[in-house]
Every structure is written in C-alpha cells, then in structure tokens.
Image 1 (cartoon, rainbow, N blue to C red):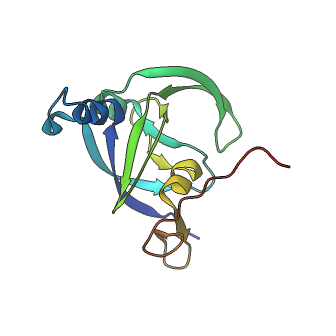
Image 2: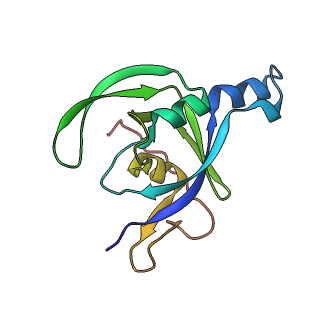
Length: 142
C-alpha cells in the first residue's frame, strides 16, 4: 500500500471564535490549505513549525511522543486548530515538528472528520458515505 494524500484547510480556531464574537473580520482569520498525508499510524494532526507560525498558533504544552522509528522526542502541541476537509470540520490541537517536516493527518482528526483511507484507491473518503456520522460515547458504564 502506498501513501495517501488529501487536501485540507487549517484555521486558527481562536481567530474563528473571534469572528463569531464579532471581534475580528472573517478575512483576517489565519488559515492555510495544504496537501497532507493521511497517516493511520499517527494519532495526532502533525504540522511543522513554519505552518504553526503561518497559522499564528501558540504553544500550549510540550509532551514526549514516539516517532515511527520508535525514537522518543519532545514535541510541542498548539492551541486549537480547525481542520476542514470538503464539507466537514473538527477542532483539535496539533503536534508541531521542527523545521519543514511533512504534515500528517492522524487518527484523531480523521475520526473527528468521519473519514478513512481507501487503500485500494489510495484516497481519503467519508467513513460513512457522503454524510458524516457523529458519535457520542459515555465513559460511564452501568
């Protein structure tokens, strides 16, 4: 199976909230559209430092992550970013890789967007067809 890419738009979620509160204009929202690899081996949305700066995202915290080669490294996580794919959207924090590393769309944002990878066609598709399905699961069991 080869690599699968898709196009997404990332928006600074604080800017989006400021527009809703009429504190800034929609045209001033920091955003960018990128070609991104859908990586089912990654859990997070991963962006690079250049993208973080373009989006105006602040670092929220630093945590240890495990890379594909099993190395453990410290990684910054940003405040919320809105992820848009076609007519779907979700919000999450992004892990930031230094320099100009390749961005990755991991399982958490893929689940939030209700998308999956079709390995035969090597494309990102709606997990439940054209209409996203939102699920809520209670952590409390009886």
